[in-house]
Amino acid sequence: MIVCITAKGEGADAAVEPRFGRAPYFVFADTEAGTFVSVKNELVDAAGGVGPRSAQVLVDHGATILVTGQMGGNAATALKAAGIKAYSFGDAATVAQALEKYTQGGLSEIL
Amino acid sequence: MKIVVASGKGGTGKTTVSANLAYALARRGGVTLVDCDVEEPNLHLFFPGESEKKGVPVPVPAIDPERCTLCGECGHFCRYGALTVLKDRVLFFAELCHSCGGCTLVCPAAAITEVGREVGVVETSHPLPGLTLVSGVMHEGEVLAPKVVAAAKEAAGDEGRIVYDASPGVACPVIETLEGTDFCILVTESTPFGLHDLDLAVQAAAALGIPAGVVINRSDGEDEAALAFCHEHDLPVLMTIAFDREVAAVQNRGGLIARDLPGWEERFAGLWDEVAGRCEVKA
Ligand code: SF4
Ligand code: SF4
Image (cartoon, rainbow over all chains, first blue to last red; front, side):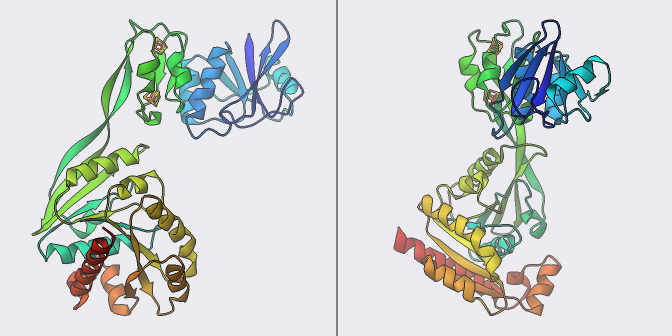
């Protein structure tokens, strides 16, 4: 399973980022392989449509779970249509912590 | 002759100037007044009447699922996020689409055709003898204001005297409004606060090569800052509207000073003559 966590930087130790579409990085955690792939978000400064475009990045990387802070309506529509579930990382500070909380079932669903 | 009434920001009385100018011109052989403030058109409030409505369509993609191979090209091309390619279908967010036509071009499977989608309407009415009012009205939640402005300008035609009321600020719809016009009347208040925004509007008109002049509204008689600005930018002051109790009373009840107060119809007609004179000099 691929879990995408929005982050301020690269890798498992990066701080989590509450914004979805304008998150600086998407960290894709492969829960079976135990690997982390960090993808720089090219859309941080884009004018608009960042929600659906970020959803596209998740689809392209095969993520089925998103862990983030908040998202807009169009992003939610796109994620829902793509069958991607979204959770709030709550008080987790880093990517690794957010992933751990998710795997323990300790995060609340936001989508 | 086509002139634009613009202002750097909202609330300066731009609409008041357009409406009164149009009233005076309607009484002097006719005018077409075009409300290009498509996000919040309000000139019809001064000139109520039955209107004829015409939709403003823009081309958007329609995807044939039989042909689409879900290759992802369109989604990656679209810089506005209007297309998301999922595993089993392509999602289209109509309100994000800027009608650039690019996705149709890049689709290797020829699965995309363009269909029309209405983003606004143009309403045309004849509320007074000599006055044709054309209002562009953008639908709620839409983003393509310039397309609605262009449609309103087209509906108004090219003949006779035309007054365009631009939206506040200097964003794309204002540039679209200014395009191809002969003169720009910039409305400002006499307070120093408005001058920064006015500066941007002056630059926009200058960049398009459109001569401009200033109307000072709500003047309290102490217009030094505005006058200094005009002097510095070589802008003629075309008219000063003093802020007195009578003027305020008419405006507060949504009236037209050119109709309700003696002398003002002539003053607005004079404003037009002044602009016409300056256009000839520049042309
Ligand atoms: S580019 Fe054409 S074929 Fe590819 S996903 Fe888009 S619509 Fe389908
Ligand atoms: S026409 Fe342009 S803006 Fe609209 S969906 Fe296609 S690529 Fe995106």
